[in-house]
Length: 200
Image 1 (cartoon, rainbow, N blue to C red):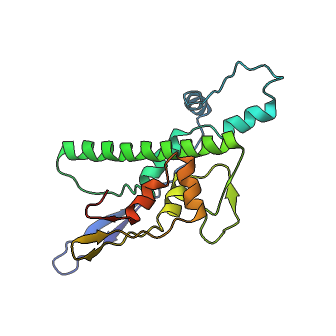
Image 2 (image 1 turned 180 degrees about the vertical axis):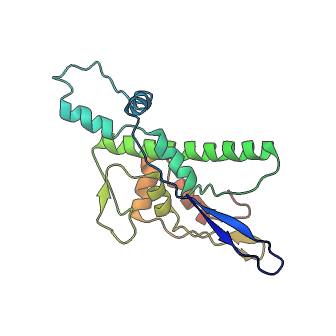
Image 3 (image 1 turned 30 degrees about the horizontal axis):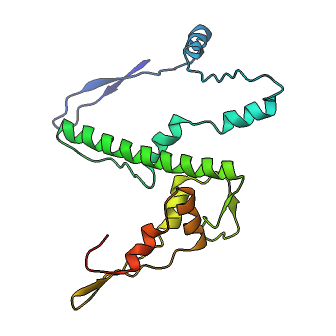
């Protein structure tokens, strides 16, 4: 630390400036780190299957394919839910928005779970669900992939006199396969193409 006089200049009076040198050192508190690590959360999986029914390799694969809540929370921040920062004045609006997005998250999870279970039961894979990769197949498609495959469906409304037509673009084989995996009849889409005065 040192002092340096500064002369008067104009309306500024003479002063003395003090120069200080500050040094900071960091030391790891090993006891605090150990205590913090002990408080960290751990996820434990257990099974009552004997080793002859569930080998170590099968257990590791089951662990890797287990449901992770963090993945669902990540969906709230990305597509297709897209939870973006916004300003809401009322507390009930905030609560309602979160609940609405939580319902959407459950629908995505259910959609994905049903398709994956059906594929696992049939021992098959879903091909053609990736844009630009028609031959790429997977046994565990994501809900986002399924929705992206179904978005290329166009409904056109044509008014001719008293009649109204609702022509729909034909479903591709992969779209028909997704509907079958979800136990949805093809009538869900094809009935829109019929002549009708009111939408179904």
